[in-house]
Length: 431
Image 1 (cartoon, rainbow, N blue to C red):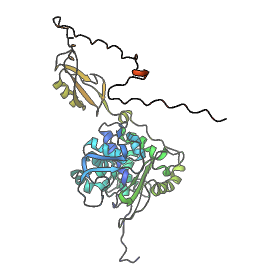
Image 2 (cartoon, rainbow, N blue to C red):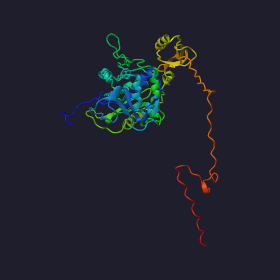
Image 3 (tube, rainbow, N blue to C red):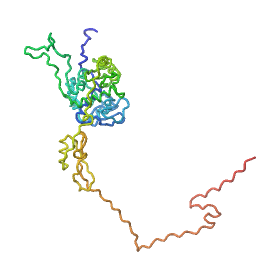
C-alpha cells in the first residue's frame, strides 16, 4: 500500500456503519422507563408488522430505491412465535416486536435520548434530525455507530445506570506513587466525570437480567460468546444488507463491543452478529474472565420488570376522576355499564379506588347506562267467538281394491310415473 492510497482510520471510535439490533436495547430501556413492563406481550402474526405511526419502505419493496413511502413495515429473519413479551423479543431479537413497541411509545425521541444518556456519543450530531424525521428504523440500528461508544452505552447498564465516558487514564501519579498535583495543589487528573443514575438503576438491572438470556439461554442469538461459569449479558446486531455485524457483551466489570465491517465502503461481510462478532468477543474475553471469580449481576427491579404501579385515587365524578387519574400518571378511558342506577350516574372506576394500576394500564371511569329494558312478551291472539269454526275435510272412501290401486298394485300420486314391475326371478344355478 502506497502513502497515496493509505488512509488512517480510528476503527474503534469512528462511526461508519449501523450496529443493527443492538439498538433495540435503547427502545426497551425507554419503554421500561415509561412504565411499560417487561411482561408486555405484543402479537405480530406472520413475522411481519406495519407501523401505525412511522413511514418508510413497505415489506417486499426495494428498500434502497425510491418507491413511494407508505407506512414502515419490517419482517423477521426466520420463524418467530406470533406473540412475545419484551424478554423473549430481546433474546430472540424480534424486529416486528420492537417496531410495534416503538408505536406504543408514539415517538422515536425517547429511545434516541436514552441512547445519548447511556453514552452513545456518535449519535449526538444526528439525534435531532432522527427525531424530526421520525425515523422508525432507529430501533433496528440503521445509524452509523462508533464501536467504542456502543461499548460505553452498554457499560452504563453494567454499572447499574452510572455512565462514565471511556478513557484509558486510570490516574496520573508522581515518582512517589502519589497523585500528581498542579501548582495550585489540585490534582492533574481529577478522575473520570461519571454521571450517577444517567438512566434509572432499576431499568439497567432489569435489562441486565433480560440480556443474560441472549448469551446464556439456548434461545439467545449470542450464545457463541458464552464463557462457562461466567455471567455475561449481551446483544447481537446485523445491519441492512449485512454491511456490518455486531456483538456487545458485558459483565458487571467489563464491557466490550465487536463490529465487523469495511470502514471505507459498503460490503456484505456475511453472517450475523451471533457468528463472527460473538466468536471474536469470546476469544478475546474468555482468558480474562476465566482467570477471575464470577461477579453476578444485581437482581432485576420487580417494579420495572412488572411495570410501575400506583394506587387508583379516590374521586366522586367522571370529571374529578379524569383529573385525578391523569395527575397520578395513569391512562384514562370511560365505559358505560348497565345498572339499576339512572343513566349517567357515576359508578366508580375499574380497577377500583385503592387498587394498584400499572402506569400504562387504562383505568376505566364507569358510568351507568341505565337499567336493561325489560322485554314484555306479546299477548297471544284469542279466537273470535263469533267466527264459525272451519269445517275439516272429510276423508274420502278408499278406492276399489283397498289401499292399493286397482289390481292390488301401489297407488301413485298424480303426475308420478307408475313403478316398474318387479324383476323376474333368476333361474336356479346349473348343477
